[in-house]
Length: 274
Image (cartoon, rainbow, N blue to C red; front, side, top):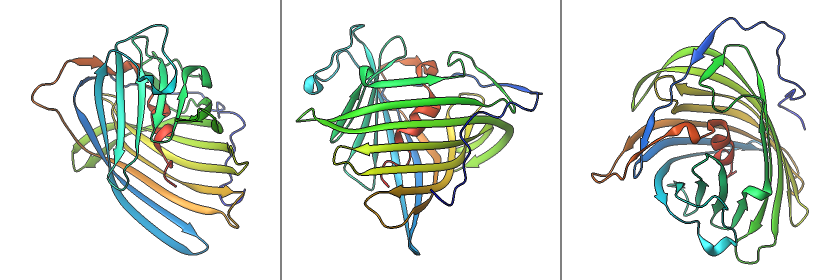
């Protein structure tokens, strides 16, 4: 792999942390939708393609998991259902989270993955609201995905990411001005598909989290993708910026967003359309 030079061996903990930032956990309205503008640029052998689209993420509540995937959670419902669609495509990406905050089922238009198919570990306590400036932590996320109709394995993915809280910054978007915590990250993802094609993605970027609510305001990254079925590396730049949220008149209820793992949500969605 060339062109990105990421070192993901260990988090950098050489500098003694000097500042702690508390990022609040707000509540979200069940029935609400959050929208982000996505700008995705690829460069393959000098051919540059830009794509601008809108991601819409809807939050709903369901009592049961769908039966199409042959999996039912032993804990039972209700479940928080988080569905993201993109204005550029007809696809979707849906996560189901149980009352304990566990991601039990992840589905898209062609594949799915259950809690039993995933191994996720973070060095950071997900229940903590404190981030220490300069204190890095590593997250590993491995999963297998299966085809919806045949239930045959579709792909196997191994991902390692290192996050480092860097600074408090003010960010202005079309939806407003936010006091945010900027978290830099590096990631490496290895994908093996069922047809034996392989892909390695390396990226470096930053997240900006709203300190008052914990909401992702902005995500920006660049990196490279090397695929076994493509002659040269694909370079990419990516940004995701909060446009705004809206709630129908009849929202069901509010819920604590502490069940979310923001980095996980970003990784699941980012670069999936490349």
